[in-house]
Image (cartoon, rainbow, N blue to C red; front, side):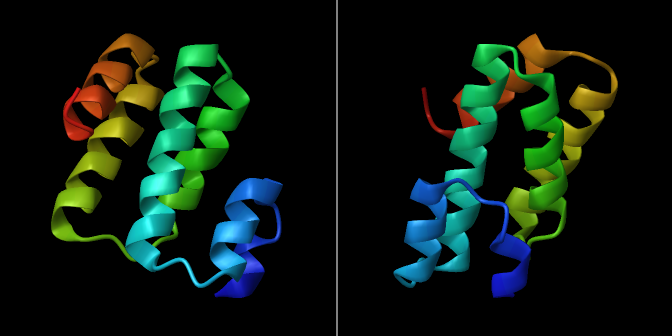
Length: 90
């Protein structure tokens, strides 16, 4: 599993190295995705969605992933951002 984290930013890699759980890592990826969408960074959001697809997700997280994937494919970043904000409760 560690090899899948080779390309993570230093901050996220440190969380992984410090024993971050799969749930914590998924949460960090979702926060990174939200920031990438807010920043208009399409390449980063595409990469993060792909990283999420490779994770072991709970049924709720899998449903969220599929919705975000569909929205990204449709180019609907505003709706993707709204979906993430609802997921995080704000």
